[in-house]
Image (tube, rainbow, N blue to C red; front, side, top):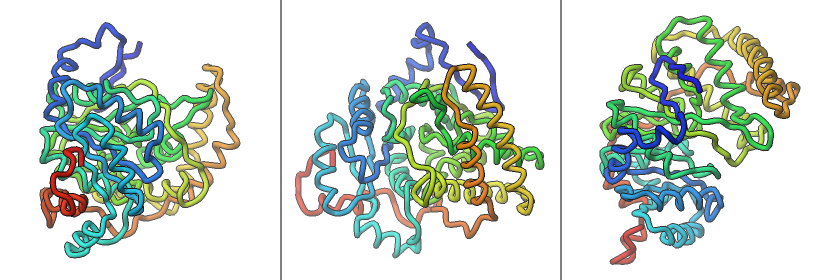
Length: 380
């Protein structure tokens, strides 16, 4: 067992004896007033991982107030998605994030531009915060997902925290995963923290898996998130959580071990491309909080911090009898170092408290089939 506390409250899973604790018990009841957001890409239609997530959510008693599933898909995939989602006994509300009405809504509000996971989750956050007292966000690619994760994420909110992020081990197939976090985010934050004494860096460094997609927030905090449009979502969320909840009202909670689908490293759609968006968001958050990185030397300092971590990862893998390839890890360091550059223009979406349209407008625009057919299924 380990009891280590970071700068934020760290809630550990100590075993079955603790599973009936007061906060966990009250979290069970809180599910009825909670909206769950599960973003999906088009490829996740009927995928085993997504099916497991929804199947586990079916096991929750009471059921969530609503389950929002924002998808980005071609028009001919929307109806199959609707039919598949309707097969689950859940109050699902499908949001077609690239529906023509949504594109028009954004254009008329002057918010058109980039899109991706962050934009899709942001679309759901407004309606979700209107539907429940709390919002829980889960990725749909965890093949080890359990309904209990909702209770664990909600438990800190029952203890008075406003924001809770999940952390978990990424050990699969006798290897260490979580590569973008281990080999990019962690050494970059370490290099920056060595050069700058700033509370925001202490906060960003306190999360054991800062790039995890699982978090819970009060509805009030969820309305105050300015989401980056794509893969910077997790880092941007932490930047806003620092402003709203700070050290005292933020927590992280142990979700055990996750088995995820994996991405290739190279290319715009791989971890390499994701690293550019994570870097831009992270460095933008720091500049917002008065940190002025020395960009001329930052890539070199990042690689030095990464080399130190690779030595530590190698030892940890050897201790646990895991396969480890330092050369492949160093190749990733070199790729990710190319992502480190001053951030460009701020393209984050506004807080829902300042949004130019209402959650009801999103529900109408992202579910055009409800205008076409009266009496549509409640899951739609």
